[in-house]
Image: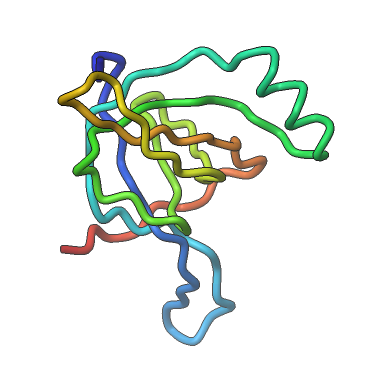
Length: 115
């Protein structure tokens, strides 16, 4: 179910060094395995009707440290903003979290890992 790869959850923050102009960076805080899902025609159609964009839908384990204001970096280096977080029941005894992702137009610098 989570066999597509390993992703990194990040928060976006402003940082500046030596009094220079602040810039946005992604700060990693957790990692999780994920499985890529198919974006259905219904979901795509509804998103376009609401003037939204869906680039990817993935599932992560239910215990993943997902925050509503987080960002995701996949193994290929692509960066996404988490748009929707939806808990789903996979089987009667197994749950997961489905994330709707929107690709960032401009790649952000990756900062130091937080614990």
